Image 1 (cartoon, rainbow, N blue to C red):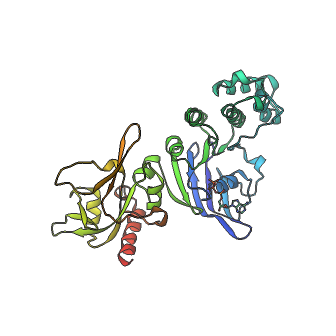
Image 2 (tube, rainbow, N blue to C red):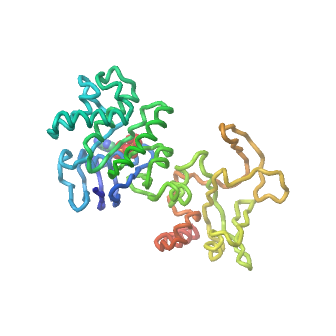
Image 3 (cartoon, rainbow, N blue to C red):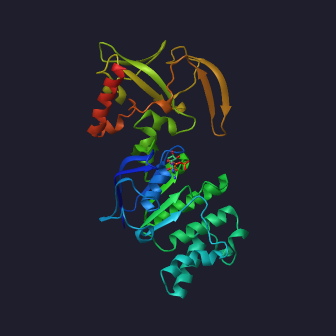
Length: 365
Ligand code: ATP
């Protein structure tokens, strides 16, 4: 199995457009890493550089112990699946899947058995003798995946392989793809802008913005403990509420977050309390997802507001409440929010240091 390492990889197009900005990243052997981010953040460029389809402006790429920065794509042992898995139009499903095995000069009977086996796993064995134009979009994409996996590669690289499928097909193929890649145990880098795909498929998710990796961690880590307000805002639906607040610490080290005319008292044992009780007066950003709130008519409630609309989302109702708070636009914010304390408690001192410097920055802002 082959791990991937990127050392300060940069891509500048035409000497002017910085698409990937000094990215360093390690993908351990067998990991399923998802590159997630908004359109234009550099995901595809990064993937294409790993594949060898794009020149690297600066930096190095390693597969295991080999520096493959200058190696032509064919010699990298990668299998690629793109959005429109381009198939050979005049070849049947069987011939398309067989093609990489024929190139590798595998014995025909063995190659055929492998192709049929892969087609069976992907549930396209009934289409083995049909041409691509007679297949549905989902079936064509399965053939493209079959062709990629039939010759077990060192690395899988996939660029939005499900994005052209309808919602039902996407969910179904996503589950199959995830199970298949895990069975094969091949290091995989998968590009998407779909957070559900990222959270469901990944061992780790790298969230990109403006050519940089802004956060990386397990799906739970990036969702529950985002490194920046941008990441918090990018993940989750409905969108997280990000609010500007001032920390107020009372004589007994009780922490209150002042949000304009309202305030939220943190329980003394709350992990955020333990961090913030040394930062009286600091300006912070509070991130709270809708499921952190309970709508109540109690008088001693923490936040009050007037109900604007109620939306039915099938399995839940979402209430939009006007509370007169100062909301933060996550697109403009790239700082470490105070919610990112779990990793600090786990002993990651880097985050602790960043947190301190954030508080300083916010204090001086
Ligand atoms: P999407 O999700 O829309 O595919 P992406 O995150 O994959 O976006 P890239 O396609 O890697 O982003 O593009 C990153 C940046 O580089 C964008 O600003 C894009 O306009 C620019 N870019 C991409 N290809 C070229 C090119 N051949 N020449 C100049 N600029 C390019």
